[in-house]
Image 1 (cartoon, rainbow, N blue to C red):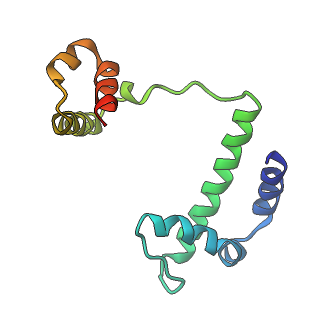
Image 2 (image 1 turned 30 degrees about the horizontal axis):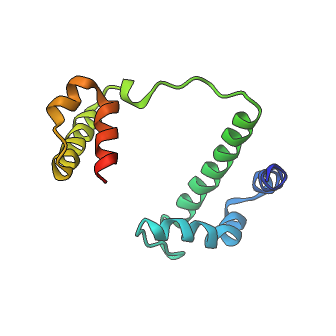
Length: 123
């Protein structure tokens, strides 16, 4: 698998956006189709989108090789990052717990891990 990734990285680094779009459109469409996103070559954003896809694939390969080589940087746990998303995530957890019949007041006191375990046991 690593050799295939090496070959892909070498190929992608040499590609112009137009060639990338031509050769990788099937791969990209297979991914965005799952998300329900229509993709058309006639869209005025097509080239920009494909350029972003090329950058994303190259970034993925960089991360892949860094991980395989043991060169990953420490990243904060997602729960340590402040933002509006935390409130929305907590509401979703509570809704799911309620729908599964989990007593969230006890779970909150015991910690998030217990809540998740209780939810998984009920699923």
